Length: 516
Ligand code: TNX
Image (tube, rainbow, N blue to C red; front, top):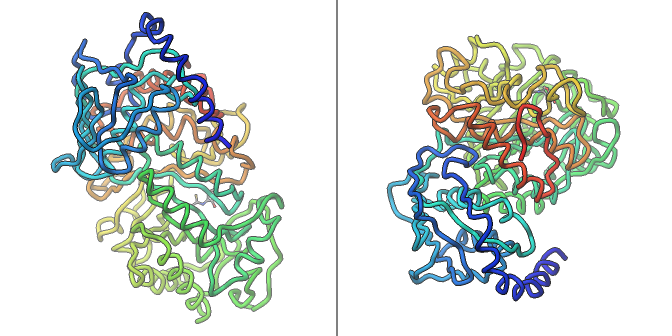
């Protein structure tokens, strides 16, 4: 339907645009600065006056799918044909792979005659396209042709990420969004070079991923009414999941699946009472309490269950990480917790994945090859430092900085407050490298902003809490520390507002930002 409307609009409006091009050329010749991009680029050297203009004769030169993605971004608002060709040409945007730019880095050389986007990997080209998109005026986000000039400011951008892992999380257990809503979210996060989407697939309220060996997990644990307060419910089929993995990969996003254990398992136990120590099915619970459920650590059936789940998840997950939760296990004794991790962490390795868990898993000596997600607030975490010294890696998600489900302030709707209110400046004002003492920078893989969904029901709720704060976390993860500057960030964020408006994103109009 959307495609049909778009095509129709193109056919109707194309002649109009051509006829009025000369009128438009008198207006709006104000290129955006090379340094206006979110997240901030590592290096920009402007070449004033050497701007490139996209015209109806411009071609896109490239042989991979990213060239097609760029054309698809530019066609609706420009109304131009922008053919994708493989032979070099004049008046072109050229995409080319060559060594020397790093895994995700790229160089963008903008001159009057052409734009060259160079990268070593497809991921770098994708990132360069996100930058190029922001160098065009916000009207480029329109889905029907706009009467104006399309100027890209002259100069050279050389850019690469500070951290390899820049993530966010959706909690599908407390509220289950549709796969289409997840896809829309992937579109929005990938604009900011976020490259991992962690899916919290199970919790006390619901189980959201089909496991063939244990079908009642989703039949019962994912039934209608299993969201918080009895709202929503549902689950991903394996096909849904695989489709999401592919959709995300096209946008340089790796899906990280999480099954939370040994706590947060009430939904699994309502489906399979043998997973409790007394064999009695607990009552279904959709309240917001945490920490009351636990797998029965001494029973063999527990490990058959865990191994089946890990094996099936690993089979459908091409990314390197498999998240096994491990948080808030108040119903599991310390000894049982360690006994559980001693058996489960190696299972993740057995199926070819890197175990990833909330930082509590760092208490286990078996966590040396694991990734810990730090979600604490305090600066001193001896067990985290010890695990890192023994070889574990860290992803930084301090709750009082990165938790997207915390309220912005006392007045904004939605969200919780246990880690405090998090306005944009709070989300932006810290350094992942120095937050925890005694952690060498190479041990830090990156940052992640989790969005727990206890108070969320709709896509609007997700967007309101995620944007603009997620962009602050994206910048901490991507941009060199030397670019860190609140005044620059808030100016760039304010200028981004019109793009979200065009896109129908219901972002929080933070009073800290002067919105355009
Ligand atoms: C703590 S943070 C949790 C989740 C809740 C969240 C709400 C963490 C690892 N666990 O179970 O949803 O707080 O903010």
